[in-house]
Amino acid sequence: MATVQTRVGPVSYSDNGAGPVLVALHAALHDRHDFDPIVPALTRSYRVIAVDWPGHGESPSPQGPFTPTAALYADVLEDVLAALDLPAAVFIGNSVGGFAAARLSLTQPERVAGLVLVDTGGFLGGPLTNAYCRVLGIPAVLRRVLPRFVRSYMHAQSGSDNAILQRVTERARTTDGVELAAALWRSFAAPEANLRPCADQISAPTLIVWGAKDAAIPLRFGRATHRAIPGSRLEVLPTGHVPFSSQPERFLDVVRTFLAAAHPCSAR
Image 1 (cartoon, rainbow, N blue to C red):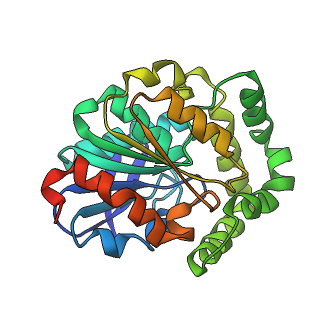
Image 2 (image 1 turned 180 degrees about the horizontal axis):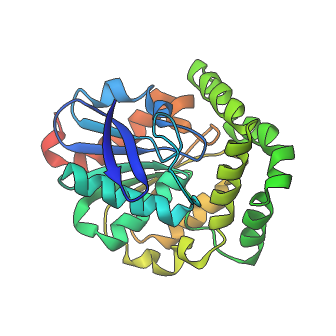
């Protein structure tokens, strides 16, 4: 497994295929293997880089004081891209991964050829949703509900979903998993995690894909994200939080045309 050094320590990633670059960014408590159902098909035309966030997958937990936040993960993404010296890429970001990709399109737009935001965070905002994030950010609360919460938002439909569900549930039953997830949820109530006020500045082509059965970030937030980002397109699939795992072929059918337009030289 390849690694790069970031401000919080080493981060692991996979790098497969050749061609225009796609970067895949997973959700909290998940890992890069969430994207395994779609990577083989994508690597026929693209170079696909899938990142494990700090403390996830094969990336070690940072040493010393460390509070995981959505904004910090977005900083880590900038470090990864700088270390790999990548050309402009399309980013497929799920949940906190979508937030990191969308923020990058605002801070370093030259690095972003396109955004595929999948059940993304970052565009929730508002007093009620901030309160929701703060409640889930209380470790004692999250410890009681997290395994059931994972099952409800996954809405597992495939063998890959079941494997993800097992991995995430095991992590959700650990103290460090609860504390990490709580800190990330809590961070989404902070002003710097709300991209909605500057969403009209996102100039990268943007495709929003949402699972209609996602209990963590329901579809109404997908519609709000679509309204907030000018020129974006919204596609809804009958899945939970990880459509690319639940229905990989339908997900690929949705994104292929978008990818060809964002990376014209990849069209075949």
